[in-house]
Length: 240
Image: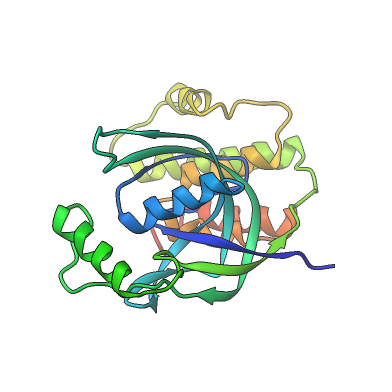
C-alpha cells in the first residue's frame, strides 16, 4: 500500500541523498516558521532541488522528487534570533503528488537578507488572516530504498572512472595518483565493502552542478543508479 503524508518543502540549490548530513543556516522568516513547526512535530521536512521553471506564488518551486531531512540539532546563532543553524540527516526519498502553495506571494524587490525583507514577509503573513503556512508544503508518496548491493568490482570501476575524469578536468595541471587516493581518504571513500551510501558520495564528489545529481537521486534500482553515475563520470560527457 502506498504511504503518503503532508510535509514542509524546502527547495534548495542542492540534492540531498539518504543518510547524508546537511547543515543549514536559516534566516528567512518562512523557513524559520518551517523549522519551528518541525521542532514542534516530528522534526522532518522535504529537501528538493530548486526548479526555477516551477513558480509557486512567485517563489521558485521544487523538483518533484526529493529526500526527507530529519533535524538532529537546532540552535540560535544570533541573540536576536534572526538566524538559526540546524543539522539534518537525509532519510527516505519521496515523490510530490500535490503542492500546497504558501500563504504569501514573493514581494517585489524582496531581499531575504535584510530587515526590510523580513518585515515585508511578516506583514504579508499578518494580512493573510488565515492559518496557512508561509512555506510550501506537499502531499508526498514515500519511495522504497534501493536494497540491492553493489559489488566490489562495480565500485572499483566507478572509482577508476572518477579518477580519469578528475585527471582530465585538471589539465594542463597534472594530478598525481596519490593525490586522488588522498581525496578518497578524506571523504571516507576507501573501502572493500561498498554500500549505496558510498555510491551516492562518489557521485556528489564527481558532479559539477546539482542538476547532475537529480537523475541519480531518481534512480530506482542499483543497475539504473550505476548506469547514471557512469554517464556522469564519462569523460566525453557533453556537460563538460
